[in-house]
Amino acid sequence: MQHRSPATSPPAMFIADSLGLDFLNSIAVPVDKEVDWIDSGDGLLKWLTQAKLVPVQVLNGLKARTMPRELDKVADQTRALREWFRGFVRKYMGRSLPPKALQELRPLNKLLERGEMFSRIVRDGNREGRRFELQMMRRWQSPEALLLPIGEILAKFVCEENFADVKACEGQGCTLMFVDHTRRRARRWCSMAVCGNRAKQAAHRKRLKSEH
Image (cartoon, rainbow, N blue to C red; front, side, top):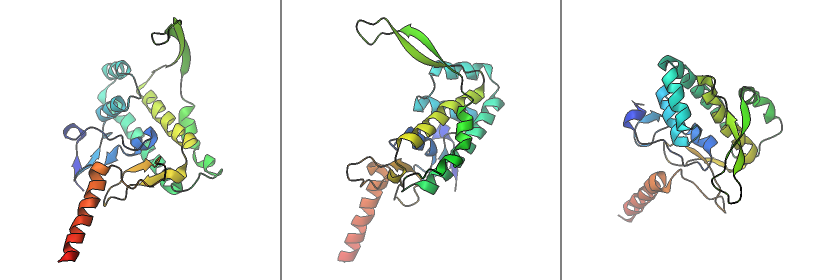
């Protein structure tokens, strides 16, 4: 399959109703060619910006003081994390996570242990009658710290979502996954505008053919 650079591709897709699965969907075939939005350090920064996982000023600062090859190395680690977690999701999707799955999540817990968080009092411009609020902050000591917010959305996905509601799009050749939060759990497509529409057109052509 041919590969298309993110620089010449549409924006990354956020259709999974879960940022954790949107991360897995950061490599996909949106039209006719495979796109990996995290194929380089620069691609990783762009994806984190679109996902709103890291403040833009933090990303700009890291880019300014980091060699491109260092960011490329972090992108390599990010893709490895993505494929490890994809295997975990595919193993358990469609059913509730069993207690034994916790043992398989050790690599994710080890990543989360590397975080450096602290609290800081800042001005509160949103609530009337309060001047300050306590805000959680992170120390971005190295480019590897970019893995931490990704690890957190994966951990949040594991802890807050029911794996029984995780589905793969039924579109032919589509690799995207999503969490089905519809009332009847009847969602079948990553997007009605893309795979859903293709399926409708295919069904329509099949009906026309059977009528002749």
